Image (cartoon, rainbow, N blue to C red; front, side):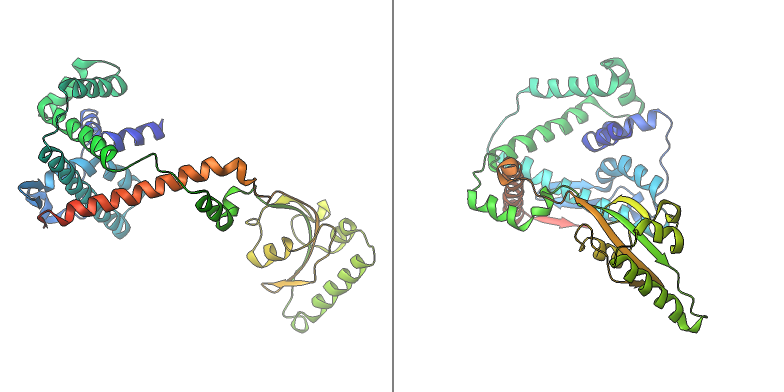
Length: 332
């Protein structure tokens, strides 16, 4: 339910603001609002003015989420970053709409009708009356809402026109990505571990006695002593009664120093005595599993889709940069 709400906020920020307000969720003062409380000019894009009010309409629902998660200076920074990103999005939207209009392109009215119907169906259960009442309660006109939806359609259409999505990825690039990022396609490596922990006691001859004990235990293990029995006799960690059995662990279970040792051992091997934080550890890996990468043939389509998306993103940024370079843009 939370995920659906967040998707709604990001997809329809204006409607989300209206819904939240109608439900009695009052707007709270932003720690970064300051002079922006006056509806001044946030940016000028050629002959189009973008106001602070427009920026706030976009970010208000998202700011509510941030305020529930953060506070103080961290909240202020996140809201500032959010508003900067929102303003840039509005600038880019205007550039795209202006490019669309410059080409004398048109959006058929029924496209906008269908988009409005979709919003009403998904977010108001198909109740058009409830949708209109919500709009009226906030003095928000249908004309303005339709214009915003028109802009979204234009942006989608212009991106599809100027940014290819069916890019061909050379096989060599797929293979190179696979070689460099094999871990992305690997099962999580795990080891079945037993461990003995001998705590150090600095007040007892600098811990020399405990170091000597740990070395003696290791020597017995190497010559065939049962690890589980030695753990029950000497280990002082929480797995003592289990014979030092930690079961299956991944590389994040232990401290990094111990994890590196555990994952370097072959099954059946006994580690050297490892000193960490003044304590002494002896590790034994009984088995290993995972860590094997899927064959390239099984992940080729996944890699191609990923590289295609990255290339499309680069093309989009190049296209937007071109629009920006030809426009007069002033931010305040």
